[in-house]
Length: 171
Image (cartoon, rainbow, N blue to C red; front, top):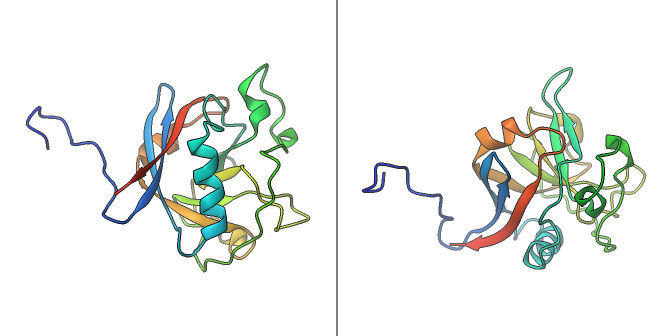
């Protein structure tokens, strides 16, 4: 606790690289990036975040039934206009990132690089956060991060919620 009586804001550990998401009306989420295990995916996310790519995007997929599954963001088309059907968000930055087997599992709070079902080597800018263990995704998607602070915020995200900003924070 700080001297003001409020909890100190989260800070990454020394040597850690985190993706900080500020979600409008919800709060902040910190994702530890697995830069050693998933260097290509991590570098892509870092590059896009530093360039403001994710700012003002909306969560275009939120799957909670029949049980909590994932939330997803990363299609630039989600920034404007009416939110379309969840399955039509297929765009990205235009860069293909190959699958990296990190050996990490899709447990609650895991963050993975989304890609077309037909080609795991075509990840780009879209990523998901796991709401409930999803073992069936293991070995098929690059798990490049883990929520280390703000999972309560992630659990509250609704379809169409907007990302104010995505920034990189290092320890």
